[in-house]
Image 1 (tube, helix red, strand yellow):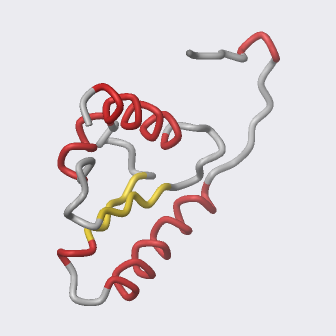
Image 2 (image 1 turned 90 degrees about the vertical axis):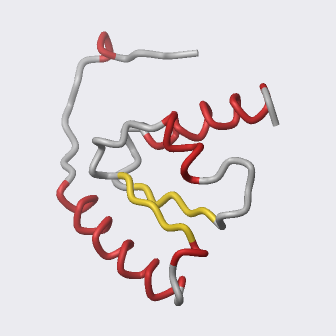
Length: 93
């Protein structure tokens, strides 16, 4: 809660932007403090690599999850590695 929750949200959102994350499924139960509607404020919602599933919104969580994973897998498979010079390395706090 409070500052701890904000720190957690910032940390989790930074993981979604990691260059090694080909695609990200953000799963919510619907009853947690950091629910999807709250957490989305920390995310770049224009990033097509992010998809969401709130388990209380669907009848069959596994079926819904598998469908989303298939879509995300297709996106991740389109990603290509590219070489960049070490001078482009950026470390953020």
